[in-house]
Image (cartoon, rainbow over all chains, first blue to last red; front, side, top):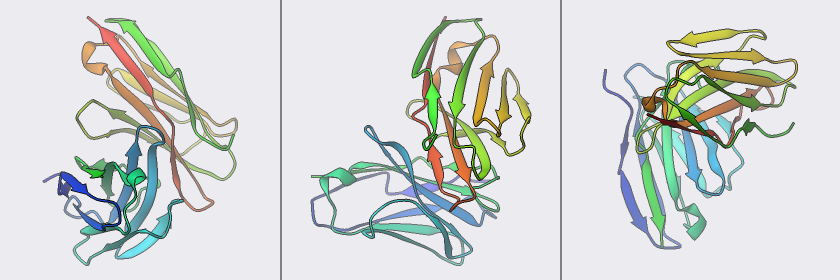
Length: 114
Length: 112
């Protein structure tokens, strides 16, 4: 089976712009979770989608949003980018949910906000 | 404990040494505890998912235990090898929202 893929791998944006990141889970996995990794805050949970519904949400402002399509692919959108949004964004997929199931991570999207 | 805490922050061992790390997490409304290995320039790799108090899991030379009543988990590596060098992360989920909270990780360096 192909692993989790994320596009793009690298992205440079300027403050105020918006960005959309994409994540394709492992075939058959219905749950996709998004995480932000920064040097100062470590790895933080953004949200989880399962069968096209947001199931859980971390403590991030409303500028961070996401959605999941019927094929389980997920997108994450960040509007009105700030310098502090520069980070590695990881997505992970699992069969039935991130709670008690093993998660498989993608390679990440490195976002730089100038 | 409101956050997930890991100790030590970093660890330098010789090849062949056995080592262990600690993960402390909120014990109230506990749901699951995950351990990951994260090598530089790679993605985090799941090691264990633990849900039951007293649970012990093993994968090769790596094993983990879980105490949900007191809110801690230990990860053990027997006979460390240079390829074990990585950051080991734990993440806790509770039933109050099912938000995953990660620890800062333990950075392991194994010298040949």
